[in-house]
Length: 238
Ligand SMILES: Nc1ncnc2c1ncn2[C@@H]1O[C@H](COP(=O)(O)OP(=O)(O)OP(=O)(O)O)[C@@H](O)[C@H]1O
Image 1 (cartoon, rainbow, N blue to C red):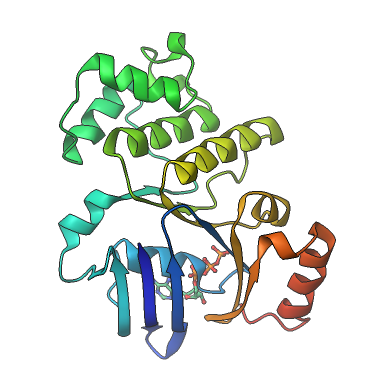
Image 2 (tube, rainbow, N blue to C red):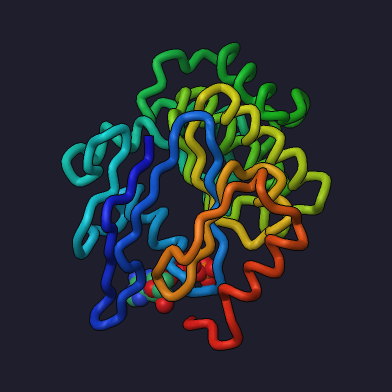
């Protein structure tokens, strides 16, 4: 569903991403870990079409995102570290706006309330102004959009940084539910524990390169931590 083929991005003379080959299939969660500046967000931005690759391809559903920017965005849901909502609008109104923008056919209040409900937003919060929402609540509106869009791939960039452990656990449980429904999930995170818990595979990135890809089932949390520290070394290129 998501495929990077020799994907490379230079910023001037700096190579931020160096020949990434990666596939994320429906029904799996691939987590990307790495020190600051490893090239993780650059990878997400290339899949979103926010950046043009220097060489190689970012494919969504088999199609180079440059060839069909709108079509590929319709299949994707992007959750950044901070979801931006219109503070004056309610969660429901925000969802209605973004759903319409994303080409969702059924934007009836009943359907969208159901999507918010499935994303775990309390019923009594749906009509409150989003300016009063916690970060966890805003992230839920983001996942409700994934549900409304029936997004086939989720691109998550540190979606739970700053969330308390309970909200983080709830968010990850919702992501797992999307995976179980067949979504392909690419998640950038610094949370080794969650990566091992929810990830199908874990990629360790450093200096723009994917150094290692690990099956999460094959490794304990402490082994992952040791491998991570070993791969990052004491001279992280950031
Ligand atoms: N728009 C840009 N212009 C110039 N350099 C950039 C740009 N975006 C990213 N870079 C550089 O590319 C490299 C990779 O950045 P990227 O944001 O992908 O790292 P990251 O792994 O997501 O790090 P973090 O964990 O801090 O978010 C870094 O050296 C960064 O400074």
